[in-house]
Amino acid sequence: MRTTFKEKLKPTPEQERALEAVLWRCRTLYNAALEQRITWWRRGQGKSVTRFQQETELKAIREAYPEYAAIHSHVLQDVLARLDKTYQAFFRRMAAGEKKAGFPRFQGRNRWHSFTYKEYGNGARLDNGSLVLSKIGRLAVRWSRPVVGTIKTVTVSHEADGWYVCFSCAEVPIRPLPPTGQETGIDVGLVHFLTRADGVHVPNTRHLRTAEREVKKAQRRVSRRKKGSTRRRKAAKLLARKHQHVKRQRRDFHHKQALALVRAYDTVSVEAIQPANLSRRPAPVPDGNGGYLHNGASRKAGLNTSIQDAGWRQFLSILAFKAACAGKRVEAVPPAYTSQECSGCGERIQKSLSVRTHVCTTCGLILDRDENAARNIQWRGQRLRGLAGMPAGMNREPAAL
Ligand SMILES: [Zn+2]
Image: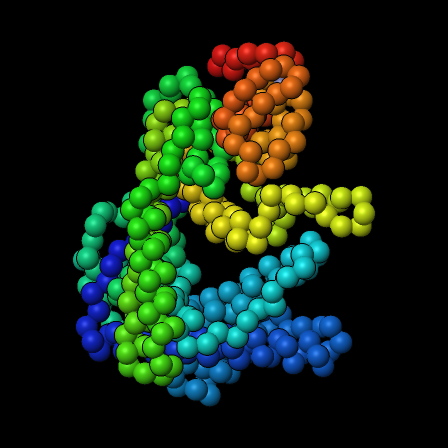
């Protein structure tokens, strides 16, 4: 089991300057390495410099520039590894035929927030409760819980309200939760945060909505103020704080919901995550005259959906993690037509996004749209595990475990 422990750091002003300098140089190195890749690509007819070639050059860079010699080599190697990762992801998206593959970007000021020691004990270690970083010194940590397992990597990051350290640990002991003999499927939507197969809706938290409204307010304040002014910088700082607050609120909420599911169920079926660009847009409906009928999608809905998708991704990874910790199971099922199919008889009933009730003209089942989808997701999870076939007819009940 792998997990991450995140704690707040309490650097002295001097240490803070040293940490900032590391971030600054990491970012500069990243941009230089990206530039090199691009020029090599242009010169070499499609042949780019590799991460390993760049890594061997690090030695020369560190000899020529004392400010880079002052940074642990693993931290710099990690910067090149990150660049390599964004490249790989870019090529993967290209290969998948995504329209906006998003070429790796140069990172501007305020766009580099963390650096990593890839090997605990080599440049970063714990000593008597403080974090010791080579060439930076001994930093005080505000501990919230003990680190368990074997520390693998150490990441230092700068957030809106200060500095943090993350310990990524392996071999964290599993603490199984008692089995309950229950299972469910969950459907995520725009109206409710999620709906379970037994028809229970979990709403989005009001706290989160309030926090999101405050982010919008802070955003407006930033755009009202003059560029380059102190007042604008202050407003931007506040905005970053609000963003961080929303992020935390959402995370907490996800953790809470995931824990509740893992406690109550042995198996939770969910829709498999799709690549971001292919997600959840209703297909265009041709009208037969070369045009298109309204398919229930608006630009705004698309935007909301993409935000929702990002949140859903985080929630699923938290859920999968909690389930793994607790010895429970998360089943990812194919997501196509979960809301169109009738959970009673399997007939496909076309409905646009705005239709909130599933009404089956074949078997007569009338059900909340999301509950119907959640049931389908549960059936599919069972089918994947070979528990139930696809029994036709009304009132199917979940197979006993
Ligand atoms: Zn039906």
